[in-house]
Image 1 (cartoon, one colour):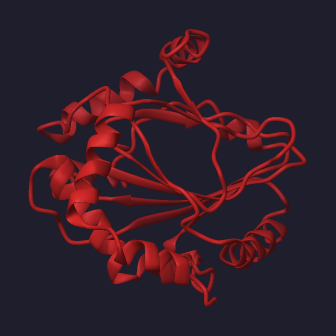
Image 2 (tube, rainbow, N blue to C red):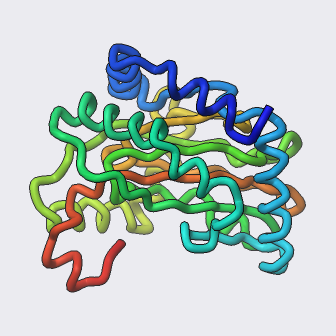
Length: 243
């Protein structure tokens, strides 16, 4: 089977009714998982890219944007018309407004080595309405880097200043300590054990989320596709040079 053939088959089969159901699932559960989106042969190609990128980065945590992903296979996925259609339809059903042009903010995030703990337990809101996450490599022993989410805690803010206030409140030492302490309370934080090859969707802008650490000898590699910045046209955001 050719690269991404299974993903293309799954994408082509998703009806509008099913996309609407996905949006409702995210509203209710906070996250939706499409299992076996990528097959093992797809993951093998992506893992080879991850291994080379980590070796170039001294086998420490790295974060690569779209410009650095040429030839990885993630660029091919981002260019699939059916993949883009899923995002635009999900936005329309989930946000109740016409979908903006598809422009992905892509990240390949690889946690490993001594620096992995520095990039864990950092609760935050995304800047984009929809976030899709595809696990490429997840540890099978020790700390797995489970995904943590407190779903749908805010709406889409009417202006960028209100969004900055939200982010400032979350990006605070006391708030971070409080959120980490809530993990001990059943139901306060949803923990998701990520399965490589699955495709996860959540409302990144509206949900507080982070990841747990991994052991320094393990690798947690995830592909992130962010879509639809509600404040893309904000003059203040452009002046501040924010992504």
